[in-house]
Length: 94
Image 1 (cartoon, rainbow, N blue to C red):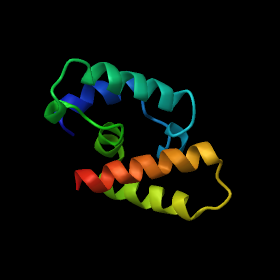
Image 2: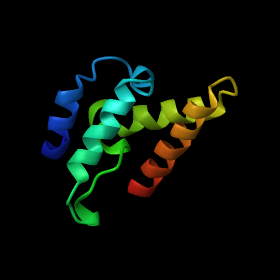
Image 3: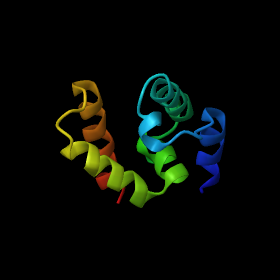
């Protein structure tokens, strides 16, 4: 795991499963930390919301889970929007 993500992951204590992290308040905390991390940095040095999640759980696990959630018609609209955002970020980073 990259050093720049270790501090974010450690602060969040992401011990729950990936799907649990996508729910409030974990995600709000992650978003705040990523925003704080990116503040004042050039665009090339900024990270996405997806980056610390992939650093913690691995690209493959995150991708598989996001695809499964995309296919699930029963998820809340707010979660579906988030899944689409994270999936887009992940594909851009690859």
